Image 1: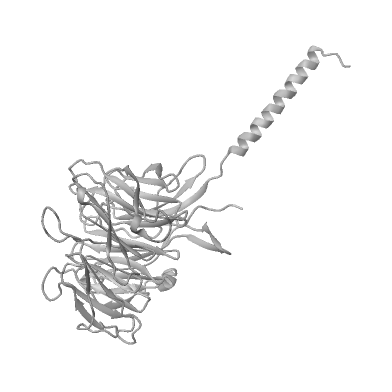
Image 2: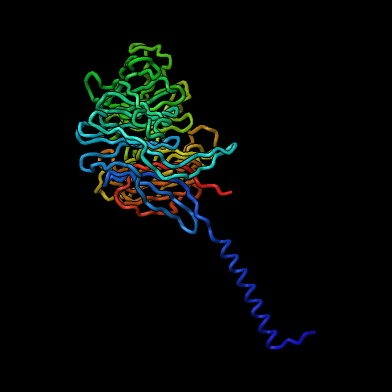
Length: 464
């Protein structure tokens, strides 16, 4: 047996210390988390009328770094503003309006998002392959102040309010700078502040928001596949005017005039006429204070259900309509809201098998000081595809809005998998990252300015 001398004791202790250090070091290396991109977000800054972007990342901590779009033009924030934006198939489109009824400079700008969806059998991976860049634009004094922008059947539809019509824009053409600027095809239909719904790339329903006169309650039906110069097939009138919203679902078109909701069957074959089309009416009730009919505005869709919001304060409601029903009716979910708050239009998402609607509660008066909120409604708790049992999942306080007309509202967007949401606080200059699994805000990013509308592209990166 070897004697246990001071020398051997020292060697033993050093060996133990070395082994512990090696183990500790390996553990620390193993705990180092590789940063990955959760989504790429684009948001409009109301103060500068610029479009910003950033990748939201996760790792040892949440991260974001604000950047600007290569080639994006300088928009005159005093005389112009950015209009609604949408994205599809790697392309983002935003409208530009001016404050002189489109006679100064208005139009649209297309952006390659730099995000690529890579198919992998029964799922996809998201690749962040490049930096965002402008691929095309059409800005001049003849674009008629674009307003509503939507995506239907892989095509962008952009309303030109002052030109009484709308354009189709093909994403495949918008991706290439050589073809982007010439990709728009114009159709007459709708007027004033247009609400538009295109169905199956075959027919569009385009409305007028006049409060009275010959165009009050008017809806134009426009064929989208006609040869030659496009023209309106026929028009019909709703029983009330001032149409603010329109959508389609399950073979029906739903409209939001001054009184309740109207719906008609989609006329893909254009067999109807102004006299034969049947307009159906759904009441939303009477306002208890004004005794006027309750109205709504913007619609959203989840499966075969149409969603909208009504009222303010203790009269606030989320309304749901089963569009597949032969005789649709309105299901109402009471949303507790303080006096001085009004619900925004719902935004819907499918997340981990659950469907949710997100509603902000915003101040009716910017100076009333009431705490603004975000309410999440679980649309189908028992997952039987019947939303009549929808219930509130959670309500959380949020930072201030900064409303001015159609601008300054909270806005929210979801990653492609429905795991995370990013939403704006325009009055605070903050973007929030919200986990749908935990139903809470997990990070707040000070980006400055007044972040307004937001779009999210992609989903968490996958590393093999």
